[in-house]
Length: 96
Image 1 (spheres, rainbow, N blue to C red):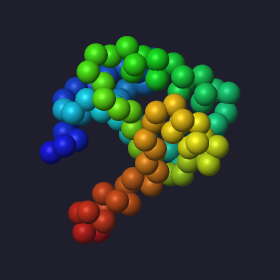
Image 2 (cartoon, rainbow, N blue to C red):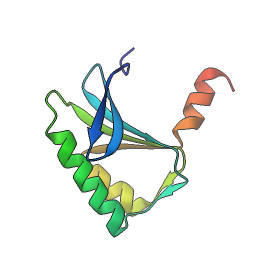
Image 3 (cartoon, helix red, strand yellow):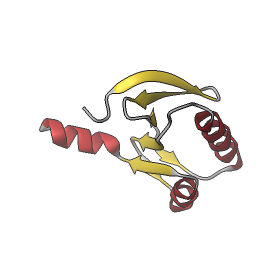
Image 4 (cartoon, rainbow, N blue to C red):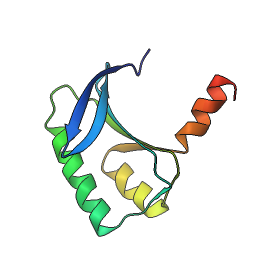
């Protein structure tokens, strides 16, 4: 109930959802994220777009795979809550 989706948002061309409590969540089926120049550019653009949306209370990134420690550190320093292997939590919650 806390994280019910209220709308979809466009974060500089990256589709994300906004929860009813104002958190913007990006959910991606990726094997691994590393802090590369291309990813840094996209993450910076997405964060700028999100920061321009009224009512945003937080930013979360959910990845099915893993996140490189450097990428995690930089993202968290930029205000992202990073959740990797999120599908494992969902499957556990559902009893699988």
